Amino acid sequence: MNNVDWIELSPHASLIHALRAVAWADHVVEDEEIIWASQLLERLGVEVNQEVFRHWMNTRPPDRSPEESDTFNRLFLLDEAVRLAWADGSYDATERKRIARWARQWSVSDAKLEAIEADVAASANSELLE
Image 1 (cartoon, rainbow, N blue to C red):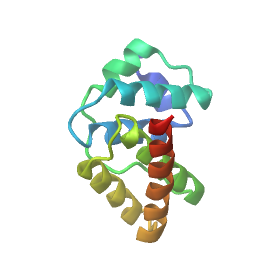
Image 2 (cartoon, helix red, strand yellow):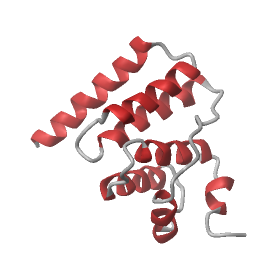
Image 3 (spheres, helix red, strand yellow):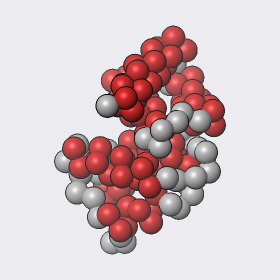
């Protein structure tokens, strides 16, 4: 078994891959993004090997949409992807483009995605004011 098998074996594999894809959308993986993704996974009960995860996150992912068939999981994934994009303090146009492509492929309406983005932006802005 190699060092990243825990990712493929995780019930959250699609989320983990999606987080890496969003972090790479702007071609720069910020430390804040890695920390945020790691903390999310730990809250979900995933044991994260920090050294392996950091190296894996900094390795360019294939350009494909995450495989997800459940509507709840799709919306959760989109919400978390937008939150990850905001982890470095901005929501880059290339990050938004990637997330919007997933939403279209998953038949999530533009209005629903915009509502998710507005909710996340409001919470991100309120955190910056604290």
